[in-house]
Length: 451
Image (tube, rainbow, N blue to C red):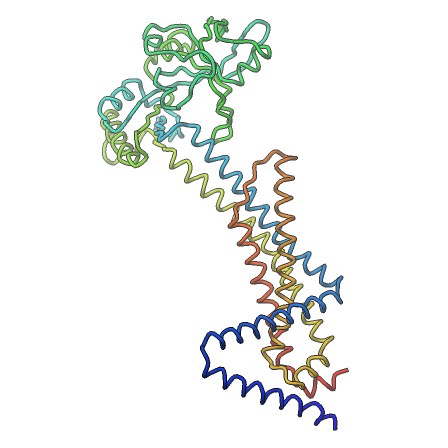
């Protein structure tokens, strides 16, 4: 009697459904598509509602599983946010060098059989720089500079600082404008004027707050200099040094009156050049290398006694370092997602074990294996989706907290959030597939007997 009471109505409903579908085949296709969409949407809705009810019954297990996913997603977002923030900061520091800058440094050379390092020999001169400016048409501006650490004194205050003897074109190459006053000119360089341009950090340490340094006299290596300008703040360099902790004076004045290198007149610490377009950098670098090798009388088998770097080279090194670090951190963060995925598999397996008899009843009354599969996959997907949403909140709040407390800049792109959420959903489906298949393959007779 029980068999007939269940099967007869089911067979009747199935027969009516087949007849109705047969009639729809002769009607416009839009009606059939509308019916299919309606059935599918209702089935999915009922599946989701049922999954939520099941997860609600196991609140503690579900919460712990979602916590694992949330931690993984939050960690990924925070790592990407910190890495992107550092990348933007480094790019800004590299851009502070100027536009399309080429840096030529004294390179390694061999002295007495000993190979010196970068800058180990004085191999660049003012004449080299002037020759580059004259012969390389792609160069918009060429400047040269030499540095020495000295003490600068004003009134009762003193400050140990890097003093740069520079040509007048230095500020144009670096695109470094004065915040107050002006910078020295070519006439100041030719006449060995005792004028100085100060960086923001030097001003903060030598002058009282609110004081105007322009026109004041400072002593650099016991030589008095009149301050004619204060440079706008540049911040840290790509290497992490404070660019504003510097004093600039005419190259000729530094060479003859301050640095005490009369015997080595004309030697420079670096040559800076800039091109009109970024596309001209490679060709300009090749021309610079050719001319310098020719001037330094280097044979073909001899290595360069100078080093040429561009902003693009520096940016590439920084990018590779940043990418390698981010990949390592993301691999570490992905372990949390893996643990969360294993947690999803465990809770779904437990759910399959607890609901074995229910599965047998559903199959007995007509449920297909695909319905059982979708049911348990939806539970795994809901766990991963809710966990990833909480993870997004944790990640965004974490990056904001890091910026406010530590001061590190953070940038969270939308792609990072979308990727983290997508990974968590894939993890949920992947680790939920085995328990769902196990549930779908249960023998209904054995399932009904399960206690």
